[in-house]
Structures are given as C-alpha cells and as structure tokens.
Amino acid sequence: MSKKLVKEVKLSFRNHFKTKPVIVFSPGRINLIGEHTDYNDGFAFPAAINKGIVLAIDKSETKTSNIFALNKEEFYEFFPKKVRFLKNGGWRNYVLGVAGELKKINKEVGPFNAVFAGNIPDGAGMSSSAALENSFVFGLNELFDLGLSKTEMILVSQKAEHNFAGVQCGIMDQYASMFGIKDSALLLDCRTVESKPFQIDFAGYKLMLINTNVKHDLSQSAYNDRRAVCEKVSELLNIVALRDATESALAAIKMTISEEDYQKVLYVIHENDRVQQFSEAIRRNDLITLGRLLFESHEGLSNQYQVSCQELDFLVDLAKENPNILGARMMGGGFGGCTINLITKKAFKTFKKVVTEKYKKEFKKDCSVYSVKLSQGTRLEAKD
Ligand code: GLA
Image (cartoon, rainbow, N blue to C red; front, side):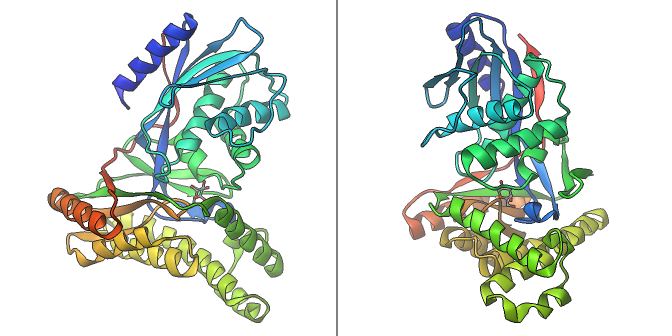
C-alpha cells in the first residue's frame, strides 16, 4: 500500500478534525477465475491487492458525522440517527449503507469524523466499493467496540451494497478485500463463505491487468438481471442455487426456458467447474491449463453470459494473438473494467506498448496497464 496515501490522509484528518484517528487500510481485489458464480453459492478465486482505500476515523464530539472524500474533495455531514439512502449519492451511499446496516443489526454507532482516499481506479472492476465499505465497517467496529467478526463485517458491507448502492452482489469482493493473504489467492466457497489460500508464483509469468477505461451504463441493471435469471432457473430446478445444478438437470428443463437463459445457466455450471480445474492446475504448476481456462472463461462470459463488451473482447483477442500470453479474460462484473492476462515477464513491456497503441487506434481512447501485488486484507494501519 502507498505510504504517500497514508500520509496524505493523516494530514488531511489532522487539518480538519485535530484528534488522533484510527487508520485502516482496505484493499481492492482481482479475481483469477470464477466470475458471476458467487451469488450462485459457487466458487471464485479472488485475491486482495496492494491498491485500496486508506481511512482515518475517530469519534466526534458533535452530533453529526463528518466525512471528507479526499480524492474528490467532497465533504458530507449526516446525523447518525437519520441514515437513509441518497439519490445520486455516489460514495456517500457506501458510508451511509454501512452505518444503516449496522443499525439494522442493533450495532448503533455514534457520530464520527473520517477522511478517506484511495488508489483503485474507478470502474476498473477491482472493487473500490467493497474496499470502501470494508474500511468503514472495520474502522467503526474498532472505534465503537462493536465486537463483530470479520465474516459479520463483510455481510454488513454486502448488505450496504444491496440496499444503498442497488447492486445485488455476491460475497466475493467483500470477502477478498477483508480476508486477503499476502502473495496468495483464495479459493473461495461462496456457500460456506470459507476459503483455501493458494500461494501464487507463476514462475516466468505474471498477471497483467488492462483497464478499458470504460464502464457501460447498463452494468448495474444487467448485473441484477443476471442474478434474477439464475434465481428463476434455480427455482425451476428445485435447488437452492445454481451451485447444485447439473447439465443433465438443465437439459431436462431446456424446453421451458429461453435459449439465452439456458446458455447463461450452462455458463455458470461450466465456470464453477473451471474454478476447480484451475485450482488443480495451480497445484500441478500447469500454466498452459491455467491459460486455456482463462480464455474459456472469457468465451463463456462474452457469448453465453453476455456481460462483456467490444473493448474487453478486443483486448482478449489481442492477447490470443500473442504467443507470450497463455490466457486472458474479462474480470469482475463486466461491461467494462479490466482484463486479466497471464503473460511472460519478459514480454510485459512490449505487449504493454502494443496494446496501448492498438487500443488507442481502435477506440480513440487510452487503456491503462497495471501489475499488482497480492496483499493482506483489511487491517489496522496504526494508531496515530
Ligand atoms: C461484481 C460483484 C461480485 C461478483 C462479480 C462477478 O464484482 O460485486 O459479487 O458477482 O461482479 O463475478
């Protein structure tokens, strides 16, 4: 995490509030494979990264809570007793959401002052919102001695996203951000909400993220629509969630659902299976299989689940043409954000140049390229 960011947040807090805050760092996440499986009680393979949110927070002596979003230079003040969703509230709704959801489980928090800033690019599909929610729930738990476990905290964050941000998300983002382990990815079972850590070392290869720098408008409604389809078909199959679906059971009801819905459910069944295959390939250090599974996952996300877009497809097609890249796919909810690529360390620089030029030529805008380190989850930085 960035020392500079911590310094800036501390300084800003001192200037605004004068007291000694608790400092929390909460990371964003990547996901190796297992997309749109989390809300189907399935499997995913996320990891926390070394980019995230730094939050400075302390109790307030006044009647109101005061929050300063340092990156945006926006201030927000609210009465802790009057927490409600704000239309077009942006980042405010994540904070209000956490406070509101804590209230619902009778964990009332008093007024607080906070300053936060982050270095996760907006809309990149690296879960800046989960990082923000987790930083607040973690900080408030610490300040007001709420006694919440990490699992309870991520459920609060997830509910904040459902009820205040309007996205019916699964648990992957909040889980990865909270429970991340340095240099590791987590094979996450979204039914039990437990994971197995896998040390990640791809030998001569590394992960490259390429941000399309687009976020198409329909992402939120399309996300909720996908979830609704999965739930509808689960009901038809008489199962709790698509995690329990089999291809043969799906074939048996094929005539009663649309071809689109059939393909979406088939994707979820296959993607869950790919996560298992991926974990086995990591154990064998079989990078070729890892790459193949990434490309297959993208095919499914693009053609069957229909959550890709032309910018993401373009980047994955470029990766396919390049022998130094074993696999690539879109990452996160879709309709923009990043692709994740498994590329030889040696080719990183050259491909970065090629992809930047070609993307610019095609879409008349820039893409951004990042490499990330896998990091520890949400944590207390220090008591300043
Ligand atoms: C978003 C959601 C997650 C997950 C992914 C897709 O990031 O917040 O819960 O569903 O999309 O895998």
